[in-house]
Length: 107
Length: 113
Image 1: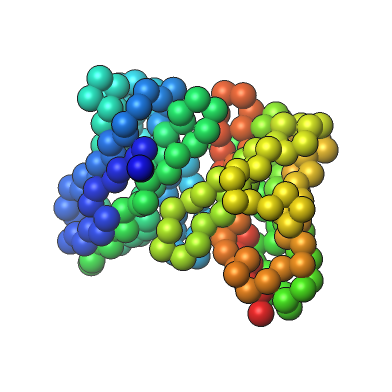
Image 2: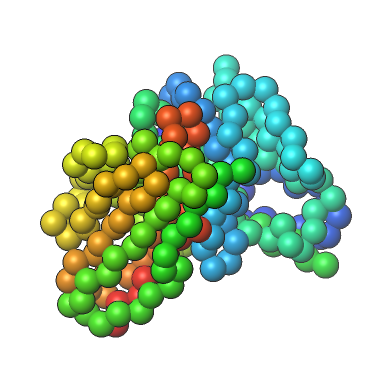
């Protein structure tokens, strides 16, 4: 049983397109992270959310606690956004990770 | 934002040798340290959790005698892969937490020949 489900698994977009990546989880959480992993493996934490919406540059993350769902949006996508995006939730004292969404943005 | 360093970033070693990976939180105190492992095309998997000055708690299936974790200070934790074998080749990521926020190190890619 996977506590965290992400979709889509793979996503190819043209430069400039608006991108949405979804994350659903099955139990109550204390917080949710969106992570970015570039080729080569380095991980960057983009957002930590427990409610509402956060925005940083072209990235927007939202969470709906009642529906147990979060989305990561990228506006005006760029080839440098190509990476794997991972949703991670904190349940109790432990992290559970989604399988990731591999995004490729084509010039 | 918080700065986390891991060293080395990449290591290649022979089978049977031990490899030590350091994780440092440079501008905050990590009261808890999580160590993760990621195999190719898979998600991160939690290996163990340690609190400063305490013994680490290992996840099921992770051998504590093989993956030695030391969290002796609030800014430094080490993971030692003892007697490494090719199946230990993976991407190891530390996750220091300050009690409020979890951060992630940039990772160490281990290749055991």
